[in-house]
Length: 396
Image: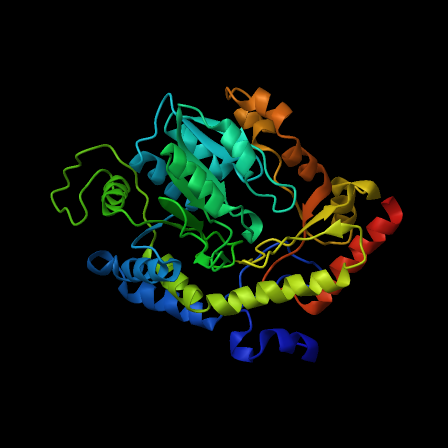
């Protein structure tokens, strides 16, 4: 560890257990310390069968408090959380659910699980998140839910979307998968809408390897989701008599133990993410691109540092990704519009969405995710930015 890198880690006790392979710059990755290893070891030694909910229950309570929610359920993924949320709201065949075009497929896939139809709304060009106006235009008598996504750790106009949903009596679900620890207009990410979900995938700022959480304030919704996530059994049931066919959506105790340590360290994790973003911002200040937007009323967590190249520059995202890959620098494409995916080719709204949602399509061609691993050093950021600047010189 160099002196310059030491300034980023602060104390050797906080240094990551494993840093990425020499010579490469990773796109994502967690900051795992000996604290998480110790917690997982303790859980492995004790949290079995009769004690198999000790860590997960504690994680649920601690996370609910952090997000200012009354109820939280620890799950194997954010996808399962969205699935349970839609089931609890009674969404089913013949119903429509509005989702943003620019998001990972996991936001929309659960809509198809329950037999409903995703309706694709466009995003704003500055936040890259769900457009209020486009959402309003998508509302119909069949709309049974709206899912707003905190993309890459940033935020849509959640209060305005919440007001629109309330006006029409439509439940709002906040997909905060990428925004743990962020805030919008003085409220924590995940505190908007009837329900909210989070992801703890290995790429996320707060990770349990795989995992997720669904939260709400309505005890009836909480009861229904707990019932469905354990094979249609009432929590605590020992008769093994399932009342309905449900699902197996539980988080393991080892994951929950790691999650509790990560949650306790969340402020430090976000400070690291924000420091990495600031380094990119300073080094790319003169480049013909813009990075993630943070407005005065927000605390953005910068899960993925994302660059949108100016249209006038002529630089294409695929050119930059190819050039950086040749330098052993990993990147990711900006999420392509959901309506353009083969998975939704037969979806009733896909064809019309492609023609009415130009912003999401344009962003996909001009934007990339830059390396954002929590283990990045200043030297890594220097290297990435030098490569980006060279791409601009070559292709602009």
